[in-house]
Image (cartoon, rainbow, N blue to C red; front, side, top):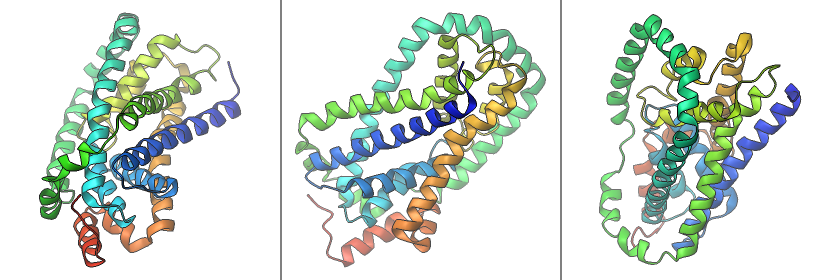
Length: 303
């Protein structure tokens, strides 16, 4: 058991570790593509992407926002696109491997604890869950119009992306695997750390599995940050019996995994780019505008 202050300090450190490792990953991939970017610029790019991801269904706004912020940072759009593509190619196998390992070790114990609680919760709340998913799908359809994956110029540029990828040495990709593991572990550890403040915390293994499931199920849920569905799962027993403090822990967990990323993205983006640019990025307009501005300034979209 740890004190509440110690838990908050550890959670702040975990949030920082997650952001820093992903900043290094993006910075080093761009360095491997011979388009270096400063740590500060890469940090802001990732923070802005986090804010857009947390506020949109299926994290739909993340990559367009990061591409726009990368272009405003002076990086060729094709290089930014390829770096994000490589990140995605690395992330999914690491995520699937981590999910498989956790499921193999902890899923049976987790289901024995959480299964009956979740079944009872779904029996009571299934109309709300169905309504939230339906609303999320509507939002997803609407927001696709505001967050196009690629603009016309970006599609033309991406045809030459393979030439950028051929420049990539092996070390940034290998480093990306390690940094992705560290980032995922930092995110998953936030809930177990907060649970250690309880007088009788649930078993750590199933708790870690539940935390992993809640965080990464948001990639598939059509509501922003899995809002509603994840919260019902949290209080309904997906992470075990947290006792009378389960609602307080839900708020704290949401604070560190959703509110803090949005706040950091907005604050850092405003300081780096200014209000008009951040507004354009978060509304999904800025990718085309940034690439056009780069072209007017003489930026090269080709390798």
